[in-house]
Image 1 (tube, rainbow, N blue to C red):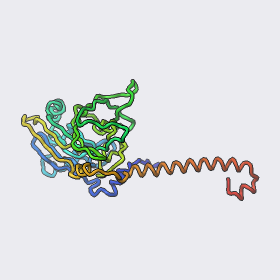
Image 2 (image 1 turned 90 degrees about the vertical axis):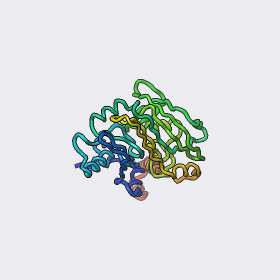
Image 3 (image 1 turned 30 degrees about the vertical axis):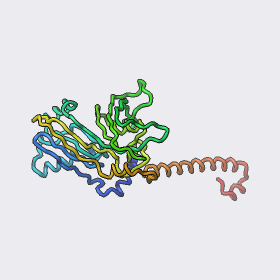
Image 4 (image 1 turned 180 degrees about the vertical axis):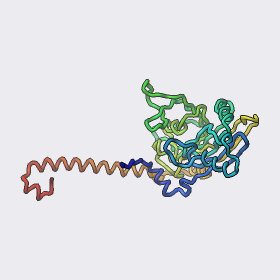
Length: 305
């Protein structure tokens, strides 16, 4: 039986070797009643499973907690109402029955009154302009072959796009990085990451969007605040978990000589390898051409085949 090989990103391999809680990421329950539960999700933990994945997920961990507490039932279990990217940490909510799930999802835009993210992004290089202190990125998103969102340079009938709007405010500008607060008018996959990268502000630690730094060995994106009207009681609820303290410290200090991220080092190694392969191919062609001019004995002495 032929073995199928799967490519593993350099950043993932690094985390497997160096992240103390790799594969054991947790959730913290911030609030729970009979209709909803609000949790704080670790970076590195999937929100929900995807086909073929055996990795832990927030919904799976929540189910285990409920089973342990004796509160799990077929009609009282976690139902997804929104998601966070695997490497995004922070506040997220689940419904605890299907009726509430449908109610939340149908009224999400009016029910959720505040949803804020914090992110550390690399500053643009000198030939690219800085973003103002606040504003709106109103750029459509498309998906590539790996289902990652991006802002297309040209829009034509061959590219399927969706509307996307991200509000941003600069919290702190540093010499090499900027700390942003962001809110979404539309909630599309990879929206914050793709929008900031399109403005030449890739998030620190974001291998998918060509970040040049990885100071925290994780994606520097955190869902800090979630405020909403309770779908059953009408009560106004607000939950806030601050981003790690070292994010602001890092931005304020600056990092003029950052250590290249593991994926940059890997790319350098691959480029060197490919160059050597091309040189060998080129040398081989030259040697074979030379060998055709030699007799059998001369080729044997030279070692050329």
